[in-house]
Image (cartoon, rainbow, N blue to C red):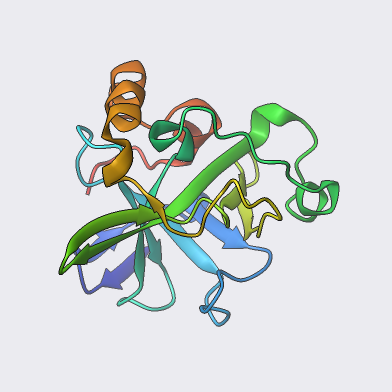
Length: 169
């Protein structure tokens, strides 16, 4: 299927690459279908592009790249909603925000996207853990990011690697 995007132009995706939200991304309740796009395999950043609104695309990253000890407690109810029955099917992504003035890169590690890598259903979960802030400053943790990149070669790892499309856009 072809989708139109404001950032990447027209792209061709397979129906099987869609990620369907079983609950909204906060502030974007009207959107439920997304596709994960990789622009550059040398960076761990990806784009979560809305299929329904060409102007909406979130920068996302595997949270364990920016914080290797990231191990949030996900409620059984949330796992059930997206149909996760075993841990191998869990993929987590977090939304990244890049501000230009002053330059600052943060990731919302308090509200990760919980994705069933097998069925490609997802929901954003809000953690009740103050150890995981809404604005985790990625720039303050460059050593963690570089360590994470050296371990993963900048690519999606584990279940998250099953989410990426074959073609780089």
